Image (cartoon, rainbow over all chains, first blue to last red; front, side):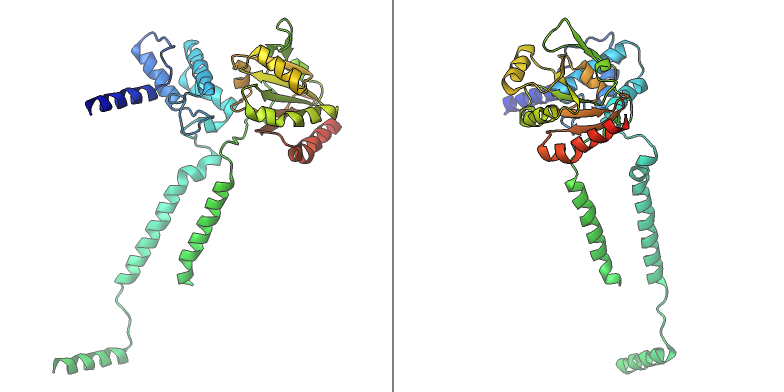
Length: 149
Length: 175
């Protein structure tokens, strides 16, 4: 059992951060920055994996490219822009706020407000005293009287 | 009226989900469309001493096809490329991507060579500049070097007849 858990842990350790051993960093902060950056970028071959996770050959190329750009002193925004210029916004896991993504960013909020308004209206409607005519009220009172006799 | 509301919501959702299912998530729109093609210079596939560059694609309507011998789809579309080359409408430039030089040369000897020129991009640097992520990919540039069209995936006869040949003829008439 213990052996099995150990084996599983080792397998998982291999999954997080595919083939990063090849890269050398001046310090832990730089390595951290590199990992955070490639975790934000999508591998276009296996689209549900980031460049950090993916073993695809293209992901390896893009990791190397990112590393080289970082080593030549570009900041994170410049590196992301470099990839967006080539692969489009799809390469980013966090889409930017621009007119083509307004629906994506604000759609849930609009749905939430509409739903809230609908619930508010329904509840208020139910709370209002039921309107009945005088004749109906008299009849109800008479029936209740007969009942209690 | 009110009791039809859930049915209405269901119908709208069904249509939206149906559209979502029919889209191909692998077809990512290229940001290069409408822009000038990326500059590059690479060794030729058949002769490492000579080079191919974006200058070879400028001045007339051109097609760039990204392929590799490891790519099954590239074999599938090869006959279509040969047919396009035989029309004589346009020069096709091959970008041999992350491949083996010998294997690629042998492939072209055996299957026929539709390319006027072949570039050899072993480390994939140039392919990144072109936003390539899955071979085969095909780009069409107008005479001024602006990228006008990109197809990701295998070319077939229908696509060639209905989209690519009409576009090439249109681009040629613009110049």
